[in-house]
Amino acid sequence: MSKLPHIGTSIFTVMSQMATEYNAINLSQGFPNFPVDERLTSILARLTKENVHQYTPMAGYPPLLDKIARLTQQSYQRTVNPKTELLITAGATEGIFATLQALVNPNEEVIILDPSYDCYEAPILLSSAKPVRVALNDDFTPNWEAINNATNEKTKLIITNNPHNPTGKNWTESDFLQLEKLLETFPNLLVLSDEVYEYITFETPHISIHHRPKLWNRSISVSSFGKSFHITGWKIGYVIAPEYLMTEIKKVHQFLVFSVNSIAQVAISEYLDIVDIKSLGSFYQQKRDFFRSLLKETKLELLPCEGTYFQVASYANISNESDLEFTKRLVTELGVATIPISIFYANGKDTKCIRFCFAKDDATLTAAAERLKKL
Ligand code: PMP
Ligand code: GLN
View 1 (cartoon, rainbow, N blue to C red):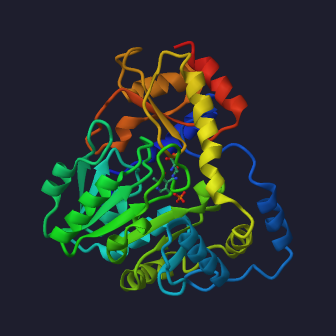
View 2: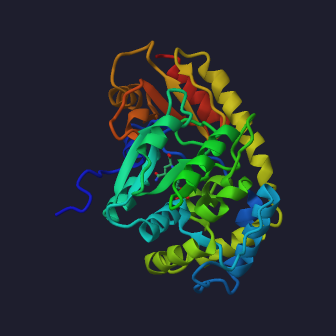
C-alpha cells in the first residue's frame, strides 16, 4: 500500500518535461539559465585536483560552517555556534525533510500557509502527522485570525516561507509581532522558516527570523546556496537551529545522507570569501523590472513582486480556462512553459494566475514575451 497515495509527480517536473517535449521556452521550474560566476567554477576546477574527495564531517566541512556563521552575523547580526547550531544539507529540501522527520510526532499538526511550495506536506505525512493548510489573505499576507484559529495544543510547527514562492511576498514587522504573540500563547510551538530566497528581495528588505531574538530558541531556518549562487543543481543548503533541536535534526540527517558532497562544500567555502551576496537583490531586481516591462505589452495583469525570482500574473481577462488548462495551452500552442498557481493550494483553488520564473537571460525573457504578446 502506498504511504503517500495522494502525492504525484511534481508540477515542476511535469512542466519542465512538457517544455522539452514541445521545445518551449521554460519559465516554469525555478532555475537560472545564465552562467555561474566564473570565479566559482574556477575554484571548482582547481579543487578537482586537490584532496577534497572524501567524506566531510557529518554536519559539514568545518570552514564552511564557520563562514556561514560569519555570513549570518554579517547579514542578521546573529551569532550562531557553527559546531552546534548549523548543518549543511543536500539542498533546502533535505533540510526541511530532516527537520520535519526529526521534530514532528504522530498525530501532531503542522500549519502550512497556502499557496505553498510543494515539499512540506510529504515529510509531515510520513511522520503520521497532520498538515493543516491555512490560506493566506487575498493579497498573500498571512491571515493571522485564521492562523490563530488553526493553532492548538497539538500544533507542533508552523512553516513560513519568506520571501514567498510563488507570490514573491515578503513578511512585515507586524507579521513577526503576530508570530511572536502566537508563540507566547503556545509554548511548545516551533517555527520552520523557509528562507531560501533571503537574498533576493527588492524595495522591501528581507526580515529574517534571525532578526528576531525572541524567535531564536524556537525556530529552524532553511537556506539554499542553489538560489543564492545560481547553482540549483548542486543541491546544497543549510539549516540553523538551537542546539536542542539541531541535535535531533542531525540524527535524521546522519541516516538520510550522512554528509553532503565534499567538493561543493569546499568550493562554496572558498567562494564565500570573495562573493558579494548582498548584490543578488539588485541583480534580480533588474531582471524583474525588465521582465515586467516586457509583460506590460501583453494582456496579462501583473501582481506585485517584492522578492524571489518569480512573477505571478493573472490571465482572468484573457480566458476562462482553468489555470491547468491555460498553462498546458501556453506550452503546447505558444511555446512558453509556466506554473499554474492552483497546485500550490491543498484545495486546488483556481485564481486564474500563473507563475513565471524570470531567472533567465534577457534574450530568453524577450523571446518569451514576444510569444506571450499573441495571447
Ligand atoms: N523552498 C522553496 C520555497 C523553494 O522554492 C525551493 C526550491 N527550489 C526549495 C525550498 C528547495 O530548495 P533546494 O533546491 O535547495 O532543495
Ligand atoms: N523550487 C523550484 C520551483 O519552485 C522547483 C524545484 C524542484 O523542481 N524541485 O520552481
